[in-house]
Image (cartoon, rainbow, N blue to C red):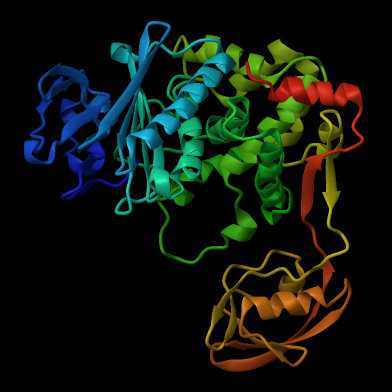
Length: 478
């Protein structure tokens, strides 16, 4: 969850970070009265059940701990969907007109996500609340809760938040189905006093990540071109990761207690050993959706089936349950093939063929040379800021994180621009003479440039009419 923060602008309460955990009183009902400052025009927003005034209640300790609370001079918008209230509470200094514009985007997202599953969940107390705090003094985050989400960012609506924050709205609201109710069995019951390890975050977080931008496109918040262009970063991150050699999506999910904002300060080799289950699951969700569409099926209908079996009934699921549900929907052979290759192993789908059937093309910038290191400029030269990718040119030359490159082919490396200019003047298979400092000593090595492994996903100008129709159906507003 988000960090608790109390200052003159607000009281932002993440309950586990604010209140004592009373293990022996877990089933005891809770009532709390919050003393909001009237002189600052503070009001209370929370998913806790409203009793009267600023008094709220929770049926047990778990629900209380799951109920973030924002107390500030907040503003509200709400609308009704199928008899339930969807409320957006905003703590942001910008004009009402900005809030109105943002609210229209939020409403469109709500309706498109409802269309994926066919219905809203039955929210406790008939209400779902977006708790948004956009201010320079907060830390950026987003966290799902049973009947609410907390959304925080340093960008206010007028300072980039109008576009920069809306993706988190899409992601977190999708969780009110996928995670909060379609729930992994290995997260039940959730333990507040120990690490919670799950096999299913590639689905719970990853498939949610797949839908995050797809929903923005269907809702008209971004264009189809922007959506397709946005696939590139995640695709290349996963496709080119050396970590595919070591762990499958289930094993990546298992690492959540060590990587998802709970990391130690010890240096680790995440660049080569870990792929975010958000990103990994997202590209697998994309592959599954496009693969299903080859059979005149789609991921929306599969998610509806998961909702009916495990979400609406609130029966927790396992990885095997996802596979069995896919088998019932798309056939046993299809499910066995998909899970056997991509979930229980770490093979990659044939994205080139999948993209072609929706009128997209996958191209590689194979004429560009590739060095294989990230830098930050220092007064002494370019310091390698991350572990070099396994088998990259820099890795093969024994360059490592923390090395400071002072010159290449006799040219001083005193800025990132200097490096880019030099690299652009070179060709694939050129050998560079690299001078660098490590632990106070000067070394030299040779780096043989290879072809840039980056791919570009784009709309194919010569796509078949049938492929264009399939793409339009995939991206169409529901």
